[in-house]
Structures are given as structure tokens and as C-alpha cells.
Image: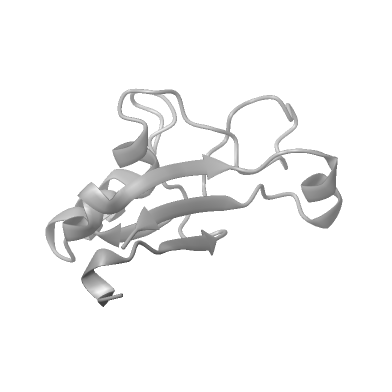
Amino acid sequence: MPLHTRQRRLCGLVADVIPAQECRRPGHFGGEREILDRLAQQFELLSCWQAARPGRPLAQTLRWTGDRKEPYHCDGIFAPASWQDRLVSCRVLRGSRWYKMSNHNPVIAEFNF
């Protein structure tokens, strides 16, 4: 079967990439906005979470804060903007299995190639 007719799914898993992937609340961020803008404009990368879930609340990726239920989102996956139509999903894994391994929840982005 020719390569262009086969579908493959590739997954990426990244944790603790930059100080904070997204702005948590309006007016509540440090240099995150500058980093995100530079990734998008200079390097033509997209945030897989934002691309897969536009306008949706951020999922918790870090649980070290005093309030473990506060959605602190500081991990993410960035992909070439040209891959946006190939992005199938982006999700944060949760559960006791992951909680035992780290104070970060893994982020997975899945693409069709």
C-alpha cells in the first residue's frame, strides 16, 4: 500500500516544558504570554491544547500548589502550525497511577499522518 494512502497515528508526550503554558486567569501571568507569542510567531508552533480545545478551560497538569484542585496548567506540547489539521486530540492523563509517579500529569497530543 502506498505511504500516502495509509494512516498512522503518532503520539507525543511532554512534561514540564516551560514555566507555564497558558495564562491561567486574565491578568495572572508573568512572562508566559511573551513565551507563547514567541513560540507562535517566531517559531510557528501551536499549542496543541489550545488548538484541540479552543476556548475551553485549562486542565490541571501540576499538583504541587496548596490547593491540589486548582487547575495549574504548566506543561504542554507544541507542534508545527502546519500540523494543525492533523491534530486529532490533546489530553491530560489523570488518576492514581499517574499521581504516584509524579506531581505532573502527562500531556498527550495525537496526530494523523
